[in-house]
Length: 364
Image (cartoon, rainbow, N blue to C red; front, side):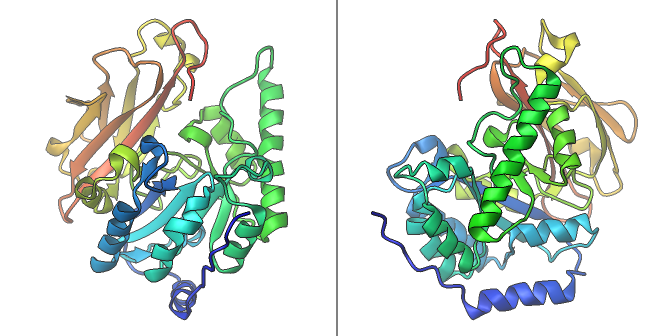
């Protein structure tokens, strides 16, 4: 039987939310950064975990450096309405709904009056796994101001069609998956935020279009900050666990800004849907940016740990391509450039998903 920890929502947190809504966030924003965590624990898988001590250091850094931590649903609502946010705005998110979010993270977050969002897969919660939150715990946390949102019904790869499944059948199945998960979250918590965090951060162009059609905001696991110009079918987040838990590198990410993207050519992350790359898998993207505040000469891209120099086609367009074949699994192109007027870097990340060479899907 789980021990339920009380998660009080302080007057300060309620006041912050009320003030946020009343002011309409008319302030100028240099960056909106979303942090992604899974486990907060000293004895869970290192790749998806941050120690309790390190998580406390992250939160203390946010507090000491006067970052404005706001609920993710309100942040995204304001951005979609074209309204700016306070400088140094941050949202804190957790994927999967592990119990250690309640036992280990919540007391620290309550100490600092920080709001947060937990993305859950309802079928996984209903299964009663010992390491996940229960519906009773989720309801108590929700009643105390914690945001809960959609992580699909049972945390499967939403972008993958089943064997012998047509595209139409796949889309119907995924639509039912998303809407069924949402219905259960609403029934259990009363919250209906219509935010979908893609399991494993995987999506493709068709899934993005479905998410848009259903009226959801899609959220990935590729890096970058948010702005009113962001693609709301595939928003970036900065992973802050495992090898990304260093406070030194997190400081840089927290001061990052969304690259002022106008368009990206060839942005579908799923490489087997790009016939030209079926043999070499060296995808080239063409990015159009608003370069008024960007030092174009400082633009650098990083692929598989190597620095790759992008090619400027003209003053607004650059292309970047890998020098080696993209390996099976998940990878990214990460590009950064300095701002002319603000400290910090503009940041852009393009995720890729590649099957095994024999056409089968890699394991998680």
